[in-house]
Image (cartoon, rainbow, N blue to C red):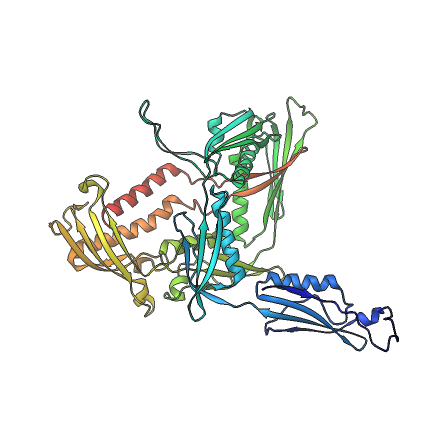
Length: 588
């Protein structure tokens, strides 16, 4: 059983006095030696030779050692030495295992708990993973969910981690009601919600059907999160004194009715809006008709943020002060906005390390990365690199949680660790058309497998897949490409899926049964799709929201600036969807 035994021994000897122990002098508490027994790894301690023995310092060292998760038992002893004491930390290292497989039982709750094979596992790490799964379930409406774990030996040091879920009943939000002086239509307020938003999948049929609605899960955290979004909405509209709070939450059986109280207050007349800061040219704007236009304001801030990222700056904070003017009154408030941008120091990349690519060479992975050692750390390019890795479809989707930055504020060097989890080597697929096969595509059944690791560059076998596919009811989207006119069309193919890092050397399929016309058309359409789609959609989804601290004479809150959409985004998005539709209907 884990435990911490901290004993402080009073130092005494016959030299001090005969009979009762004399008071210990301060010199006898001087630390003469410090030793850590039971481990060969370095342990950082505040308890040092030459200092006076201090119980609080020793307890702090024990606490920090526990927090590392490396030890299963820690004991501290003191031993008298001449004119002082020796401090001995005796530790028992926690057994280290390597993950073979993560199993969620039952697996019907949509938990996304992907951990790469080979991930170090300890009792503490397993406990943290179970807690993470439990919090995820509770935030999704399973308020009483509990998650236990078992570490099951597999082979050698490898283990399987089993998460055992007791979800309980799920509470769903069936209604969100706004009370008070809202100043806006409830429909517009609901559009700002995220976690509490009720989504309509299919419209109702009057007198026949109420339609199909998706009700979100309820949790107190989701309510508080959407309260922050509503406050941000009012700040962006110029209602700087607005208050938003949860008025009441009524839960009956599995349904939650959430009431949100809003007091919008008065709309501020904005006389001037100024943006300044270190490394940022001062800009002063006089809003037209004194109306706060968050779109223009946020566009300015997002442009400054993007420039800072380009220069390798990681720390970028924005503070906006609402300063009432002398002419401001409670019934007609007026203010100047003073926005200050604080930029940190630029960082350069020291080392980029990929972990989890057991069957793919580092060259194949690194080719999709837009950053290299020694470059300025551009977070935008880092996010774009992650998107390119996801497009390559070699690994499970990665995000900011899979990419860890280790920054050194002294040298301004940052190391990047990218944790990858390879997709399964083989898979099967069965799909059919929604509608007539002549319009919606053929019936398809396929099985494919990635080739084993071998070779480099264009001949790297793991970047190829072999497949056997059976098509039924084939109707070519483009006539005259030489497809056989038979009811069932079996195809054996060697395919190298498109990856941004390989470009023209990927995205092709060799299938002699289809003829050279279809192979050439498929290659061209694949290249066209993957190269045009990023151009059409732009960087949407790559730029996170920007938090702006808003200070008013009465309160402090946060406004979230959303990145602006690309120009003509509806048209460009429609073209991207059409391009994807044509490619999918071609069986590519």
